[in-house]
Image (cartoon, rainbow, N blue to C red; front, side, top):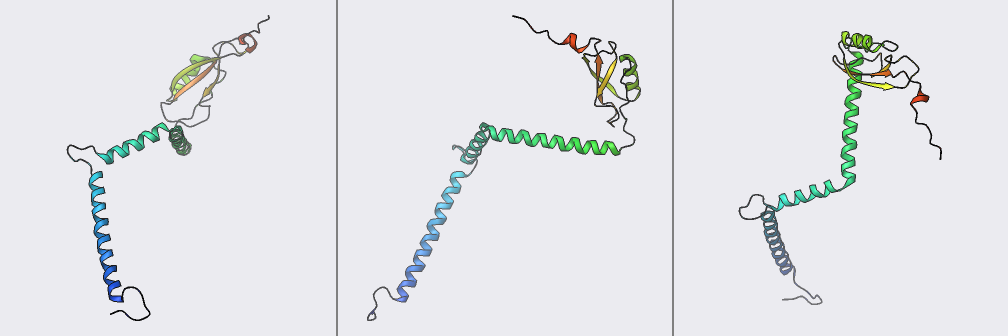
Length: 174
C-alpha cells in the first residue's frame, strides 16, 4: 500500500531494485572483462596474438619517431660520458696505471720506443703542418701526463716539415 502524499516506490522496493541493478552490473562487467582478457590472451591456437600485435605496433611507432631515436642516442652518450668520467677518476687515483710520458720534440722512432717501454701502444700517426723538422713529434692524444690503462693506444701527432702556409690551398684567381 502506498502512502499518501508520496509518489514513487516504497523503501523495500527501492532496495530490491538497487540490489538487482548491482548484481546485474557486476555480472555484466565481469563477463565483459573476461571477454576482453580472452581477446588479449597470448598464444591461443589459430588466432593472432593480439597482445603481441599491440606491443609490436607500439615498438614500430617508437622506432619511427626520430625524437625517440635521438633520446636513446643521447642517453647512450650520457652513459658513455659517465663511464669515461668514472674511469678517469679511478685511473687518476690508481698509482699503478701508467702515465703518458712527454714525447714532444722527439723524433718519431724515439717517441715510439719511450711509449712502448712505458707499456703503451702506438695507434695512428697523424701528420700536421709545422716548421719543426719532418718526423718530429708535436704531441700525443691523449695528452702527456694523463694516467691510462696499460696497453692504451696513443696517437702521435708528427710534423710533416712544411710550414702551414705551404700546405694551405692557394686561392684561385679568376
